Length: 88
Image (cartoon, rainbow, N blue to C red; front, side, top):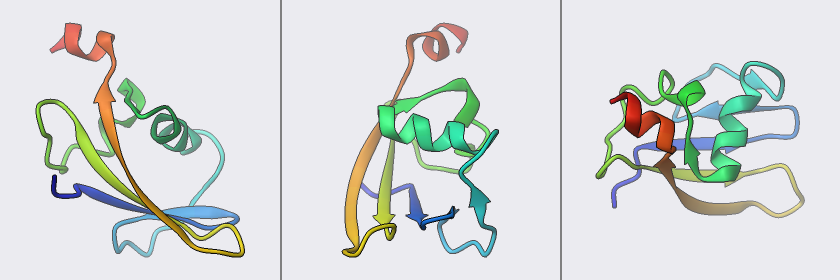
């Protein structure tokens, strides 16, 4: 699958794709990070992903974790929650 979104995790904030906007790890932005950790498309993150490519209701996200001494890169597939499917 082609990655729809790239998220860069830094010690104090995160960025998405090549944007210069840095989001702190606090409300309401932390909901996006929690959704990635849970591998779920939640109602809170749908606005963030509105321009992303969906694959059978899922979104492929690449994570570049730069918070530790060693850079960690991985991909996750965000899957819809039941309540999102019911709404659509």
